[in-house]
Image (cartoon, rainbow, N blue to C red; front, top):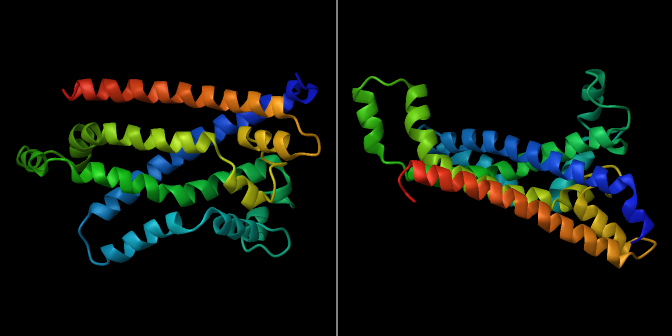
Length: 239
């Protein structure tokens, strides 16, 4: 096996990839649920709100990456100086692993929350409205309606949405490459594959091994999600 494959870089890339998947999918799910509720509600200006929610999803990853790159570029980025004054970022936010990781995660949440919102909205639209009428007659509060009607019935759809997003997050590459202009500051498993394949020293064996490891990690996450989906379907009498 190639010596470079046995370095702590692999462990760091695996940790960063899983951490990115957990944080980004969690943020996208929470924000996507809020977006879906806003998109479903009846109010003036709903079409404009829907457009603003969906718009980030339509922006190509390369353009999105350049937007966040310019926002946090040292010297002239609009958000760099204010956040530095608050002590959130360092003087060179795109050159440190922690700062770059935060920026990449926020960029991914900003873009793909719309995808989650659309899937969750489909689940909300499928809920039988008669249940809410019965809940109103019984004097249920908004929280009780959400807890005992909305969330349980949307949960299977929510798990499917999270499954798709987790699979994408574990294969993250484009947003890292375009935002930080390279994978050196935020290493991921896919970045390692690219590095081994097209780096100064071509290491096909290491690239293949990392690719298999990515497939194993994705498979484990899929098994966990399928278990949750099966249990939720059984509780609803669907399986």
